[in-house]
Length: 323
Image (tube, rainbow, N blue to C red; front, side, top):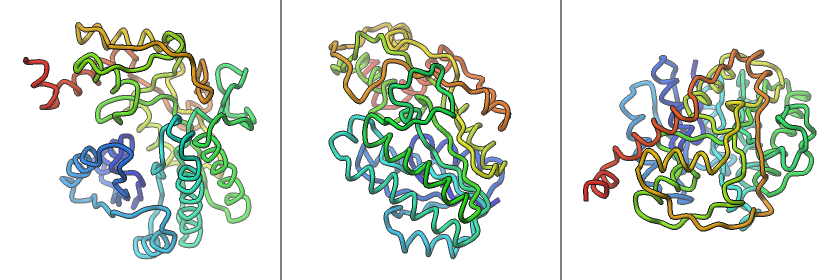
């Protein structure tokens, strides 16, 4: 298959593009290498992907509507895995217009290009944040998700709804995958796992909200990628599917796992929960198991160990730890 992976230089996108390239698909990556975090990290991911002869990167922005149409017309994609987005729940509160522009309007540009040029399957990366303060635990896909707590979740939920409309009107196969707290090697530096690792190695002060008494359904990136690949391979009409581990862990316990591996304490400052945050997320993954054969394999303890080993393998970190 010829597959477009948007956000291919990012955390999950680079893992996905590599997995697809390794199995022999023809992969076109698309990324704008923005400066939400250090673009050098994305350039390093792109360099890793460049070793595959069946992968190539296009540097472009999904907000460039005509550019997206030109790419789709030239490339004739069989499927799209759309992971490009402005991420970060808290940053979205500060810049709501940017999140709507990228995560909703940019997604619509891709959907219009996909339906115009007859793409067989469109897989959209959404988020567990759309569930907001739901009382239905574990989170199940039939929840109305009509009370998002911040612009990131609102834009993602709006794109989900538009995906249904495009399926209904134009016959676009559109699968929504709601990711739950993804972590692992090459993780974004604004994500909790990376922040804790930075704190224990460099002494950087980080916030710990609600004393760490917040549950997250930590899901290792390889498991998420396997779920995405299954969705790419199986057009489903329109479906919304949770991808998590299904076993929530307290934030303070997650922090403790990294501290134990490091042999050092994180430099945390306790703060109250932010209005945009929720106390617990917990995925019901029965639908993913049924429709995609999804079966997460990496326990949190194992995943944290893999992440930590990757983190300390970086030259900069190794030098700090050897002092």
